Length: 482
Ligand code: ARG
Ligand code: ZN
Image (cartoon, rainbow, N blue to C red; front, side, top):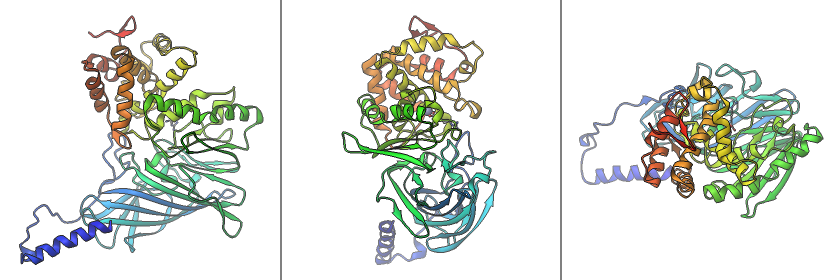
C-alpha cells in the first residue's frame, strides 16, 4: 500500500520535473469520486458483497460471553479502492459505535438489514489504500438478516457457520466469494471455554485478565467470507501433524453423547488420510491446516466446508461413523474453497464435485461404483422431481442446495468421465484445481476446459445435464446426444 503511494508521488515529481504545469496534465478519465455500489454484481444476490474496493485482509478481534450472547469487537479491514471512492458499503448487522477510514472518523448509516454505508472524511483515490476500523457490539442471536438468524447460540457458546449468509452476524465484510482475503481472528472467551476458527494458531491461547482467555487463529491463503467460521463452547480437542507437516486440529463438543462421540471421532480423525487420498486425485491440498469440528447435538443442522476446518452437525454420526461427509467437506477445500464460485448460480461447481468425491470414495472402498450410484440415482426419481426439473447450472435460490445441484451435478461429472475416459477426466479435475487455484470460476470455464483437454465436442452432454430442466436420455452408460 505504501509502495503505491510512493509510486504516485514519484510520477507527480517527474511531471513537475518536466516543467509540465499541473493544470495542463489532462485527466479526462478522472471522474468526481463516486459511491461504491451496495452489491458486487451477483445474479442471485444483488446486494451481497459491494463494489468500489477490494479487501486483502481482515483482522477480527472479539470478546464473547456465552452467558449473555454478547459480542463486542473491532474489525480492521485492509483494502484498496477500485475507483475514486466517496463512500462505500460493508455488509454487517450488529450495532456499530464507530468507523474510521485511514485514521479519520467516518460517518456511517444503516440501509436495509445488512448494509452499512460508510462515508470517509475524505474520498479515497482509485488504487489508494484503505484501512477501515469498525467497532461494534451486539447480541448476534437476536439479529435477523435475509429473514433469519444464522448465528446459533448453543447451551455452552455459539456457532457462526453458514452459506451464503453468516459474516453479517459477527464481522463487517465485503461478503461475496469474489473478494477473498486473508484473516486473523482472535476471540476472548471465559477461561476454560474453547474458541475455534480457521487455519493455524499463531500463538497458543493466552490468559488475559478478568477471567478471559484469548484464542488466535490465522488463515494465510485467500478465504471467502462465508468460509470464515467461529465455534465457541466446551470442546475436546485432538491435535496431530500430517505427513507433510501440517497442523491437524479437531474438536468435539463435550455435549456429544459417548456413543456417537466415538462414531464422530472414528470419522473426523480420518481427515488427514482422506485429504492425502484426495491430493492424489485433485492435486496438492491448497491450504495450510486440516481438521474438523463436531458441534453440539440439536444446534447446527448441516455440515460446512469452512476453509481448513469443516464443521459437522453431530446428526451425521448419530447412527454410526460417516466418512462420506468428511470426504465431501474436504473435497470442497479444492472445489468451493480454493476454486470458488464467481456467482452463486455456479454452485454445482462446489456441490456436484464434492458429491462426486463421495462416489469416488465409495468406489475405492468397494461399497458401490460411481456407475452403480449413477444408475441408482438415474432410476430413483420421477420425471417431475426437482432433480430433473432444475438445471444445475442455473438452479435459482430456492434450489441452490437441492438435488439437482448435488446429485445431478455429480451425475454430470460421471457422464463426463464416461465420455472422456478416466485419464482425461482426472486430468480435467486436476487442471481445474490448479488453474483456478484461489480464484473464482464459472460453469462455462469448466466446460471449455473439459473440451480443451479431451479434444471432444461435449456441448450436447453439458446442454442435457447442466442447462436443460428435464431428465437427460442415457443409452447404456453414456448420454445420448440427440
Ligand atoms: N455447502 C454445504 C455442504 O454441502 C451445505 C450448506 C447448506 N447450507 C445451509 N444453510 N443449509 O457441505
Ligand atoms: Zn457440499
